[in-house]
Length: 414
Image 1 (cartoon, rainbow, N blue to C red):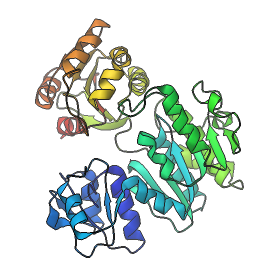
Image 2: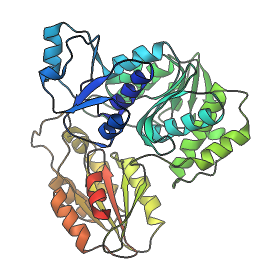
Image 3: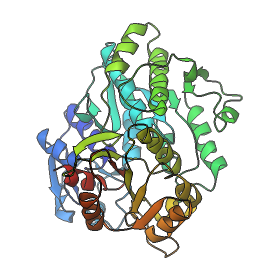
Image 4: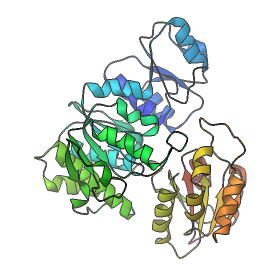
């Protein structure tokens, strides 16, 4: 498995190992997921080179971040080994399962984890692949013995269309992945295609970007907003909605499930890594949080909830993810930090992209500043030094973004 430390890849590796398959893989650097795999006895090599590929491998699975010139992919081609992308491989697994695909622009990770917890507590024994490490399971994978598979379904490049879902959950729909989708209508067309593959669709039927997609669907439509508002440990109205979606999906899968089971399970759910995660206190006594939010809407909602927790100052270190997203959603990003007092923008995390000079962290910081929030650009070292000297008791530090900004939060509380 090339890129085995990826959040989806590492979960799939655990599923394969659970099925008795011999699994090995590589990644560019160590991470919480590679550590998790090593503890489970899965061989992980740090550094990618051709000799990592076993000559007798039956299949090579690669992350989409590993392009065709990746040395291990090139070696696999030399050996004539069959290759599958992560989502193709996930589709193969889904094809033999009763799959519940949890999708949406925001909230799908938490909703997937909540749903897996509820079904587990109800005795359904599901397997689950989640886009984060779930505190309740100590992993991003839940091992189950039934034919139910709960899987986080990503819309990027319409990848979720490799799945064969019996139930589809759609938490919400917004314009994102601007390097692939032309506009909101293009995103909506992908979600409509996913809905058409399901027998049951669980969604917010009044969401303005979803309601037009429901007309003429042959699937049974379940409005998750009709669920009771479950009491959850996690902060924010958005997590109450995630719980509603999980509860509705659990009932769609198990009509006989007791309401008390749903209430108790969701009420005890502890959350996932990098989702409004409290890390501890800095040396000067500021509370440190970390969150995966990387879209303007998610940032705005997270910071509004954070503002409720302090009368002190809120310091944010934001790690923009992708040049295309930062450029195309610049207007939204520039207005998303109004509940923060001071913002530092880290260098844009390029992932699969090349810098064409059209956008920078300094440009984003300037736009945020124009909207009334103090902002500047800085690298990880500058961010850490700043947060070690200024925020104090009563203040909150929040690291945000889909890159590796969480490392700064870890260092601040170490």
